[in-house]
Length: 95
Image (cartoon, rainbow, N blue to C red; front, side):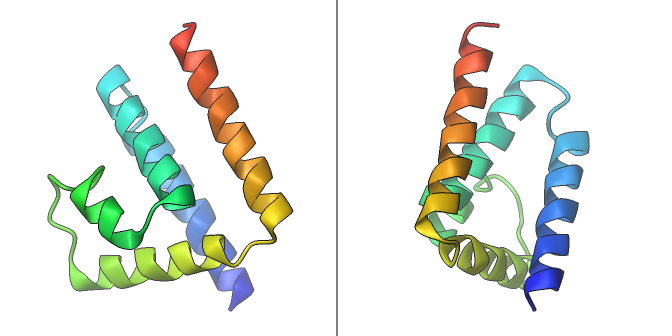
């Protein structure tokens, strides 16, 4: 199960990078999505960054499982992902 979750994360990240990170507004949406995925709840995803999209039941189930995998990370690994996100957000502020 861990391998398929990793594959899902890679696919989701690639999709979001290719489809969302094409403009400034989309880049902000992508970063908000990642931040919420790391430290928020699935409900916050649907109310926040994904609020204007029609997220079907299968996509919600996939996001919930992905969120569960992220929440199951070792605290040190999750902290490193959050630090990376902060670095990326900081570099965009200076751009």
